[in-house]
Length: 179
Image (cartoon, rainbow, N blue to C red; front, side, top):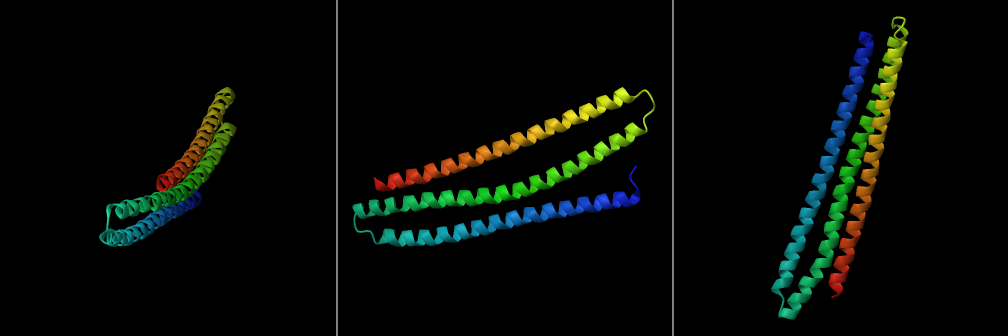
């Protein structure tokens, strides 16, 4: 059984984690807002410059050349924007995952301690039941670890795929520009 002091300490620690995660979420949102504001300002400036350039075009060839010169930077900026969004989301997600994994480890440790305490105080003849329960808990922990590893691998695969798509988009934009 937990003492009132232990319960108070546990609640305090949980609130600190909650406030830390909330702070992290707001930090991620703040970065996204800053990124979007910067992207919007840049897009407005570029649109104004492009509009002025279009107004000074004298023939169709100049117009085609002007339009072609816009596509490569646009592709690179879109890829850069996507990378920044991904980095912000990834770092925020990593912090959340880290906090959840730490809390899960603490909960597993507390649960194992509670099981050990219950096993010590269990009536004679219940050793096999306690042993089966411990085995089930260990199997559950192993399954959880396997899922965590799979999620981590999937995240790494997604990150490499995003990088490959971004590189392909930039390369395609460069090829289109040369034509």
